[in-house]
Length: 331
Image (cartoon, rainbow, N blue to C red; front, top):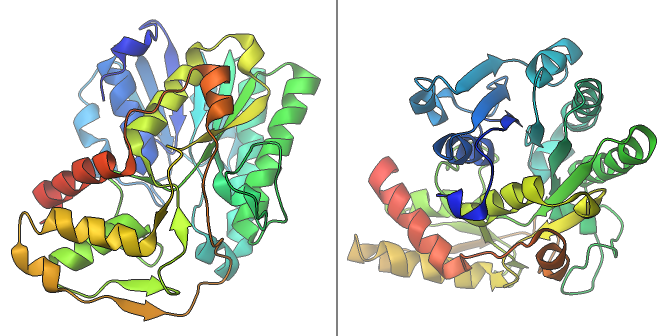
């Protein structure tokens, strides 16, 4: 993504934690292409070195193989940094239900380490990946930042604790923080493999192989699927926003709801342009997944006003880009 139109200075040195992961590597690439100096901190537990291998030849890129659970690694990564884009986390609701201790260690203790290191390094602002899971059992649609419900998983609890810690560090130490509540991000470099693969890349790879995708529930559950370039824009706009935009959280989405049934139909239509027989692949329905929220739809009005967020990619436009990438790179 070309972010030069957003007016981000090329002089900044920016740390991306989890920079070898799906979202982090896309951020690293966009920032480097803009002329920024980028430091990537990742322990490669879920991130992949091949996501950033093409960036390592740049003199403006530094990779630190380190863990946010190690405070020394955090201090090392924050040295001389202007802005932090904290993406490192253990995602997935099912993973957190299976292993809540590790999710808490990474998402809470690791997050606190990064706040401390950022405070000590006197970074200008700390942006972090919050989550739509924070809305929990809140029934209202669209989701508005100030109205949340009871968390439905250990993962959701960890992401809410992040918001509380960020606010305390802003109030107590003067560290400017901005939380970005991501809604079901998808796009290039998102891993389709593994037990905790996200639904879009998982469905794409299954359909390409003529395997029947399995939908949890009856397919009426809906999500505000958000293309990666919208997320990159939100992060950049959070960097360049004035101080009045800090010490809060913003929804990062497109503001459009798509059911899982609709999603599969869209994917089959897009993929059938490459292979017509994909249209004939059947869908399997299974039990609802523990901890899943039935419906998710974001209000993005606060982000529009606060940081000038103006997402360019609808779910259909984003899916077209993503499917083309997957077909070219993974088929």
